[in-house]
Image (cartoon, rainbow, N blue to C red):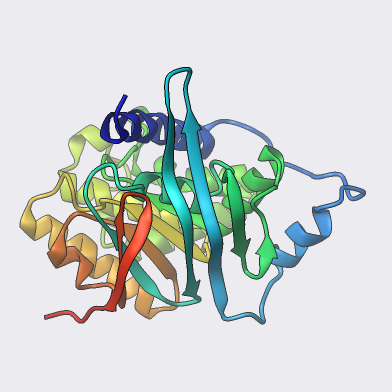
Length: 279
């Protein structure tokens, strides 16, 4: 099995896992105060001092089958400051999806370190990673991943329910973010009644309603026409200008110009980094 085929399988697998992790119906996780990593989880959730959002040190991920061992990421080291907008680019199979998977705390690396707000999290157990995700990370997907059976308001409200936020506060927060995304007039509509651009606006609203520190965006304009794609990129740019850190995987050179920095991956390694400016 070659690298391209293996990474295609990995990409499908982690997207399904993200959907399950984000939308699964579960109560808010309460970790055992005696656990060895609890202090670090609390430190991250209450963090206010560091300017460094993400740092990787020699981060590697190896996938093994009975037939082959494939290195999807090979000793990747970089950092992302709070408030940055970083684009990750590269050909299919280069490790972009695997990197986003690790940064989103969906999987653990094979080796190396992953620091989130200066705390080492690469060895966290799944419950600890889930607690961190819900409180700190928002996700925007290429395929929107809205729940068809829920209307716009209910889709956006969902992360707040999982965080245990009360009904009246949820309503206030959802209304505020729908107004901000200019989709309030569609709050009672269902996803299939919306255009692609409107669905992605709802997806962005859902990603930011809990005020996450970090947004991970996977090809956010990949299923949109140029006009709607431009609107979504403007929304992400505005969120970044208001202080939200964004890491975006994209094949689009145009979309990458909205980022402040572009990281290029090839064969699981960073080959170049450069600053970008909107033209």
